Image (tube, rainbow, N blue to C red; front, side, top):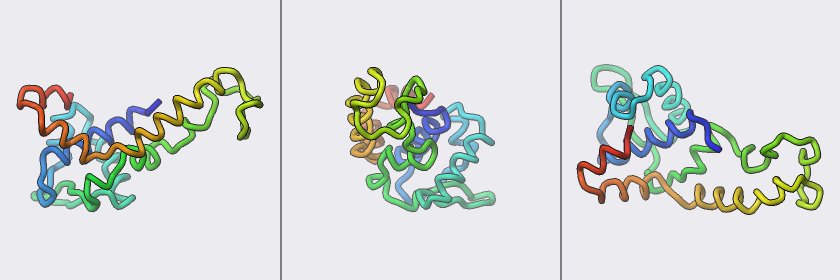
Length: 151
């Protein structure tokens, strides 16, 4: 349902929330190495998130990224909207014409009708789950278990 780009963006923000106290900057190289994401690709994702005022980007030897917005105020849906948009919560999984532009379920294909409940639930989970919440859960695990969260 989510693109790799979106998954990487979420993972990078969680990484920042787990590994900083809010005032520390973490460089793109460290984030990409620890998460196993190509640095140029991750850099573009992070710049997109910075453009939408979730992060601030600093250049130079002490450069890196820090949060502009409290991680407890950034929900997963915010990131999904920025990177992927919300079409996957609306569009037909099979791409059928009968489902295009239809608001009422009665005019949609059977799969679209059945998946509506799931889409609504996933949307709600993404809307209610924050980066800070995920980071807190990770911080509460043992050190050896934390490493499993990243790569």
